[in-house]
Length: 405
Image 1 (tube, rainbow, N blue to C red):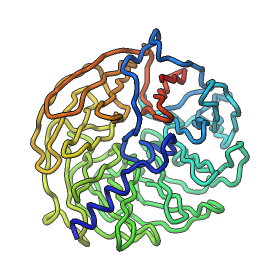
Image 2 (tube, rainbow, N blue to C red):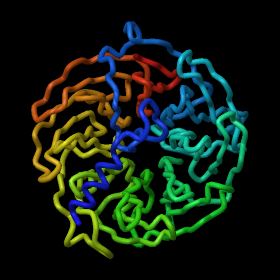
Image 3 (tube, rainbow, N blue to C red):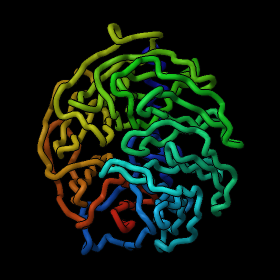
């Protein structure tokens, strides 16, 4: 069984289509880029192909499919906002269309590190799916025409919206972990209607979290892996039924989990983040039987982890990068890079790209020894995770979108 799960994971994390980046953390949802990227990432770099202003504000990451870039943004309209979907040309950076989706009469409160447009879009089968948490979700064609939107799924957010949905089995699945009564929900992609809704099975003291689900394929059927407050759950995408769960102490969980070696790796969130590895499989509460290791230091509150071979890489919000043996949890190295980090790192070849909140880009060589290759900067605030397509690196800052190639 372990071998079968391992093969399924390897198939899952392989790039789905060379040249595209259709969802948060790329085609395999694990932050892997099958590209060779430049290491000098700065405003005066010869690799800077263009820099273009992005209307409004938002920390959603860019997604790129067939030479088009898709983003979401929040545009101020008096006391309210317009939540928009944007499309840019990947070759020139030209804005092709800017489509209003949802109007909000009064700007909702949010955390200072959040935005009103934080979840990343998804592109699949000529459709664009955009999500704004408790404010609504929509589907468009790739010319910006609205197909459907759903503003009926309500919950009490804390710090605003955050997690991105995932697409599988004709459903758009996402967490609604608010201040009370947290749940996971699935919408039918044909019309946005509710397919199922399942209440989180653990009564956490602090219930809010912002995690993005991960699809885990297996010969017996796919599972949705989704950490939240005080628990990680595996859910059946067909009906939402919880298959297994493991518990811990933690809330406001943000990083998307990663998988490999028959395990899922994730962070427990606030107050003190811990990195955990849980063996895949099982049923019911597997806390006592399937937790393989727990690392109490260096775990991220916000950036997602990266797995490369036997090495698990993580960057804490305080800018400390670590390399951990994925099978045992032992630490190979842990080094302070500098600054605060919110963006999830990416892996391109044997290079790890880490961007801090001030726009400083660190490029490290992967391996059991710490090896910083370059340090450069775009000198602009950024919390959005970068994207890679057709050999180019795309970075969204507070005001601009950059392309390096």
